[in-house]
Length: 156
Image 1 (cartoon, rainbow, N blue to C red):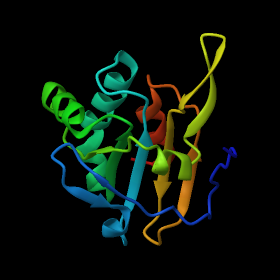
Image 2 (cartoon, rainbow, N blue to C red):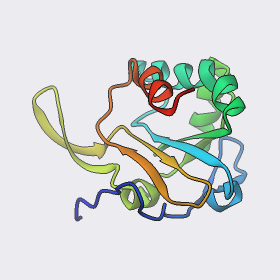
Image 3 (cartoon, rainbow, N blue to C red):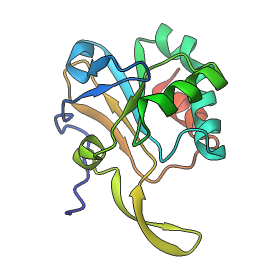
């Protein structure tokens, strides 16, 4: 599996994935808007909960600035629904169990965790412009404080 990373200016790979309720969500349906797509390893784990709640708490200001937010993980729609309901998440969580979208974005592969190499989801965030091109590609981000840094970079 080649470690292909996206960079600003690259076209964002389009996708259609089921959300927590099994409804299909396509990136192309957001054309003309700016979209923040973030990839996280597993619903209901401490770091992923912190990150999701930070996006939840920032959604009003992000939306006011014209951004939509999509969270993507390998979790099943049923687990995503539990996560959404438990933490009152107010943006779509999408299921990518086959890692197709994760791999298309370079957000799945070898990573270091507690000094050990493993293969899995690389916590990553992308900002896609209204033209469908990558504006920002951030790999191996930390769960804590990431949304605040992103908002600062985006001027939100």
